[in-house]
Image: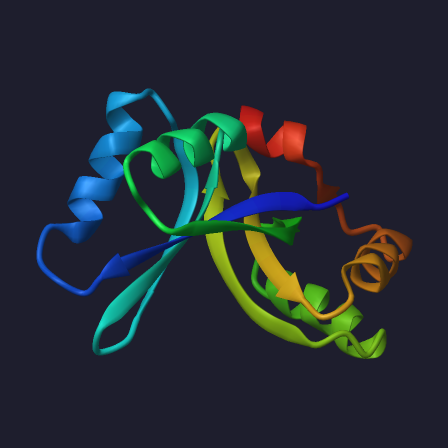
Length: 144
């Protein structure tokens, strides 16, 4: 049901993000989505990739501190109000959204995709599915 998100901790300095993405690029890991949050001293890169096992092995071998977190991928109709409808379903189910980020669906021009980190993934997935909102599986995300 969930998608595996990789979080990488980086020093907040010029070139740190470039170096990390370069290691992945050299090893043919394709990033599907990426979010960067920063503080004064460090940044957190959250990303969805096409091959989680390869990416985590490469990052570990390169000395990057990282973790893998389950998140929810949701296909949202790329129309005004599409995101609001999803948020209404989660609100009705009393599921809190901790953070989220978006990306376009590659070959799927009718949908945008959102990655949600929620308190109760099972409740969120069930609520969304019951309202006809597509929850994306890991395999599908890897093929976008």
